[in-house]
Length: 101
Image (cartoon, rainbow, N blue to C red; front, side, top):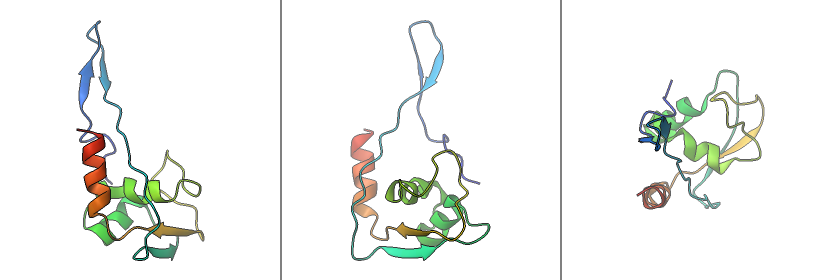
């Protein structure tokens, strides 16, 4: 399973207490190239990201594209719902990098 905080930067506050830097995610507009699927038993965000992007760490793209249908606290998805999977992710990745530079 993908690690949600693997690439998060660790910061220190004034009392030397560690915390993770807040990550900003770009808005993901609907695109004509998007794929729509109906979720099945056992499907997870990281597995779908690996299938469509060859990178399980891009689970957040699918999550952000479906904010009203998916829970933020789990890779697992409800069964039988339609979700959108953005396919043209170059702009999304570029916006993510710009927001978190």
